[in-house]
Length: 416
Ligand SMILES: *Cc1c(COP(=O)(O)O)cnc(C)c1O
Image 1 (cartoon, rainbow, N blue to C red):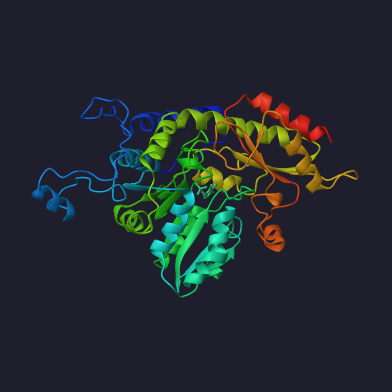
Image 2: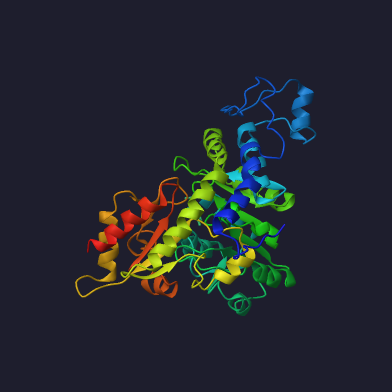
C-alpha cells in the first residue's frame, strides 16, 4: 500500500506510526512470532557455517538435485541462516522474494549483468553512489553495456535518452550525495509503456522511508552494509522483488558469479535488523531536526534534505516516501579567509562527536566531504554536473542526541 507523508501532522507522529508498522516485521519477519529452530529450540536462527550438507539417502540426493525437495546441498546454492534473513528482507520491502549478496556492489553489478546483454543500453542518474557510477561509466562498456546519464529529477530526461536497445532504467532516490529526489512512479510508467525494466537502489531511503516495489519498480537493490545492518560491522547486500526476477539475479550473481553472503555476515545483518524500526525512527527525526537548524546557520549556503519545504524534491517525497530518511548534506559558504573546499576539510578535522568516515546508515553519525573522497574519482565536470560542489558535506545521521549533534557541527563550522 502506497503511503503519503501528511505534512499537517507532526513529523514525530508520522515516524512513530511508520516505526509501529514495521516493528513486528523487523523483529519476527512476519506478523506472528518467529518460530524457534526446529532442531535445537534456539530462538535466534543458528549460524550454520557448513559448506556442504549431507544426504540422508541416494534418493534424497537425486531429489535435491532435481529440485524435487528443498534440501540444502551446498552453501553457494542456499544456506538456512541466509534464507531466514532473506525472508525478513522480502517482508520489509513488500517483496515475494529476496536474495542476499556479498555486498551492495555485488547486488548492483549482479543485477545489471543478470538483466542486460552485450548491446543493452541503460539509463541511470548523473548523481549516484560513486562506485555504481564507475560501474556504469567504466566497467560495463567493456561488456557492450552502455549507459546514458541523465538528470534523474526530470522524467523527461529519461524519456529523451531512450534508445531501441534500452533494457533498464536505473533509479537511485534520494540520490547520493545531494539528496535529489526522482519521481519513481513517473519513471516506472515510462518504463512499463516500453517493456523496459526498472531497478531502484533503496539504500539511502531504506524500506522504512520508501518502498519502491509498491510504486511499481521491478527490483530493489540494497547495500545492507548501511542502515539495514545498521551497526557498521558487516559488508552485505540484497536484491528484492518478484520470484522470477530475483531467481534470475540469484542464479547469476550468487550461484554463477559467486557473490554469496557468508552465514556469519547474514547473522550480523539479521541481528541488526531487529532494531531497524526503532533506529530509523530516531535517525530520521534527528536528520529532519538537524537539517532545519543547519539551514538557518549563517555559514551554511544550503542544507539538502527532503524534509525541507525549500528542497526541490519535497513535494515528490511527500507523495512517494513514508519518511524523509536519515541522510542530509550541506554546502558551506567560502569566505575571504578560506575557500569552500578548505572550509569543508577543516570542519571534518574539528568535529568531535560526528565520525569522519565513509559509509552511512550507522548508529553513529558519519560525515564525509565527497569532493575530496567518495567522488574524487569522478571527473570534475561530471561532479559539478551532479551538483557535488567543493563545500558539500554529507552527513549520515545516527541515533545520538539531536541537540549534541547540532552543537558539535555548529561549533566545528564556527571555529573557522
Ligand atoms: C554503500 C552503497 C552501495 C555499495 O554497497 P557495498 O555494501 O559497499 O558494496 C551501493 N549503493 C549505495 C547507495 C550505497 O550507499
